[in-house]
Image (tube, rainbow, N blue to C red; front, top):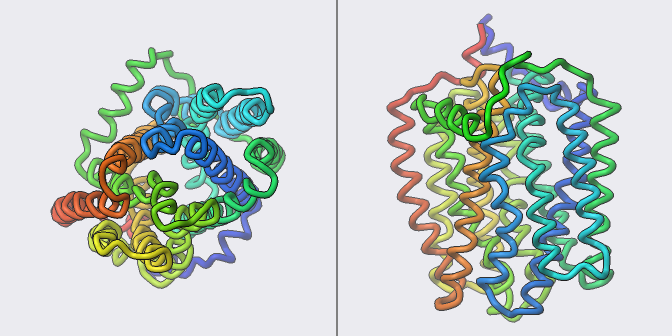
Length: 411
């Protein structure tokens, strides 16, 4: 019997039997839901005060821009320092900063600046969490664990976005931010007391300047064609996530309020929640990799239906189907981690996450600017069309690379 056949028998029960995974999973549930609620609160505050799609998208993107520096320069901390310590420190700092955002006398501009600061601590946290998962869940259990993590992420987005609009309408934006601060505090406690301490993966290394770390990280992923292609497939999310960036003006065009904004933001995540378990459990490692390209194309191409100027219900279906195709990211993530040396996972994930988040931020700003002149529905369709072309090119490239399935790589 081959290792591949044994790995495929891994179940979700095997994944949740690991206590450390349960702790990280629960911390993610709390922090993701809180973050989405906070983004809804800030987005609505800006749009209600300015009525400008551009300013609203810019404020939304402010939470993404710090990944340019943080993701490239500081994610290496997750390799040079104990990963648990990195996660706890980032959570504690973010809890304090979001608490400051919730104070009633803090002006809107200062809130945007604080959001920028909060996000600066996200790259090293996410790099540490992503890098420690393969140690907690070896083999194909990592693929199932990734599916759980991504499903949880999408579920948290659904909960945070869908409930966020209603919560802001009922309790106000500032108290909603207070709830977000509490999620960071609880997450820090879970990681500190439920995740085992591990020494730094890279050991003692010479201290490098941030610019040197950036060059080193970029060289790591761009010099390898397989890593580069997998990373670019992940970055396609910038195109099919554009509905998030124009959710407020899109809902306004349809005559909807805060609740409609929350539903639009939640739709794609909801589609992913439904599709991820089936994609990860019912397909083998090699099949997942073959499906990556077609699914990436589908995630973007589905948005072309927005050219028909659909109503709210039809729009939610379109965004949900696009999100369902987005589960190809599970396979891309698993293949990526299988190809990166353990002692450099944090840095590799930092570069990948930086590009992914920054790409979304830029896409949101461009979409917001375009929505000042044309219908938000047309803006979404254009993003879907460009993304479809990019996905098709990457699909052809991936077939040439012919990377082995992550589960089959173990012997």
